[in-house]
Structures are given as C-alpha cells and as structure tokens.
Length: 193
Image (cartoon, rainbow, N blue to C red; front, top):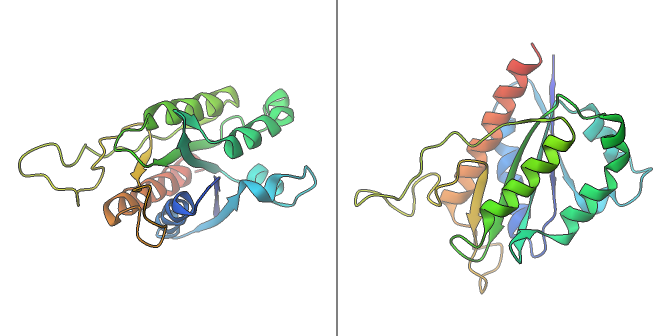
C-alpha cells in the first residue's frame, strides 16, 4: 500500500520552499510513499485538483515563513479556506506536522508552530513532533548540528535576510527538515496499518 503525504507551504522569497523540498525529500526516503509538494497558490481555487491530493493524503505537513510573530498571510489564507473541511471534520485522524523559517535565530518561530498545530487540532488531526534532541547547546555542539535551533514541535530554519534562497537556509536546517519528513512518513505508515 502506498502512503500519501502532502507538503503544503507558502514561501515569500523561496527560502521556505527550499525547506519544504527538504521535508519532501525526507519523506521520499521511506519506501512506499507518494509525496506531493503543494504551494498554497495551487489551492487558491476551490475547484483546484490540489485539494483532492490533500483530502486523499494520510499525512499533511504545513509550512510557512514566520512573519511578524505568526504564520505568513499566504498560509493563513489557505487555513481559512479549509473551513468547509473543518465543518465536516474531513481531515480528522490524518497526521499533521509543521515547519517554519525566519531571518532571526528565534524570530518567534515557536508561535508559528503553535498556530499551525492548533489549526491541525481544530481539524481533528494528530500532530507529529520533530523528535530530535536540541543541537548546538553545549561547548561540544556546532551550528552544523541537527535541530541547531532547539525546536520540539516542528522543524525550524533560519535564513539571513540578506541572502538568497540559493545560499540559505543552512544545511543543518535542511537536514532537520529532511528528518521531519522521514519521521512523518514512517509514522503515517504505522498509523495506516
């Protein structure tokens, strides 16, 4: 049986799209997965076939930049467009996870992940956390460590505001996103057994 996973994301400048691709790559590392990357722009019309992918998925991973301490307007618009699915609890018992990116080391990214997790909970979804110990938090640590930003709820990335998406986020943050994707795929396979 093939496990279907969707990565739904908004990306303002390409940095979060790069993180979304890393999440998708991690999920694809698990055999038996069918992974779709869905930018929120593909969901602007209710009749878009991209909605069918989300409805058919066992797991949906949501991602966006953190702007002004919360999810970007692009992801919020998508979230609001799901109200019909919320009313019917169409996504209840699907797995969910999240990721975010901002220019600052902290940049209130935790708040964005809490907002996304709450959104998933409203839909009756089951949240999958990052399950990586914090990296780079001791004298033996390094900025190259997985989970260097110390997240638990989801994957966080940091992209310097004066560097383009071909330079940042750094490899450690993309590897952390890959780890989240792999975890979601493995959990989705167990969940659907």
